[in-house]
Amino acid sequence: MATQPYRSTPIFDEDTLPAALRGQHNTKAGVWGMVRVIEGHVRLTYLNPPSEIELTPEAPGLLLPEQPHFVTPLGPMKMRVDFYDQPPAG
Image (cartoon, rainbow, N blue to C red; front, top):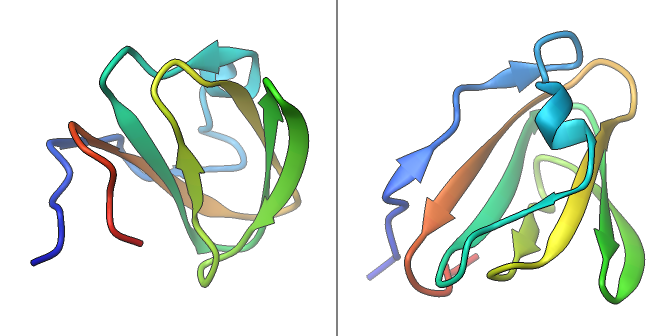
């Protein structure tokens, strides 16, 4: 059975994406996040270890507990973040 998020952010677009998500931040201890793009493309930048991936509706981005990161819209987009208390499935 699929793991259900215990909380999700509202759906943000390139204009409503909060500054807090555009700047360096991290999930809390024991919390996994899944950045889910609904439309468009978003760059997810991990800071430790440093890497970047491009997220699309077909390719969400996993956030590990306490992993520093930030997101950057790549043009028009819609996205949300789902939060889990155990590693999410897909």
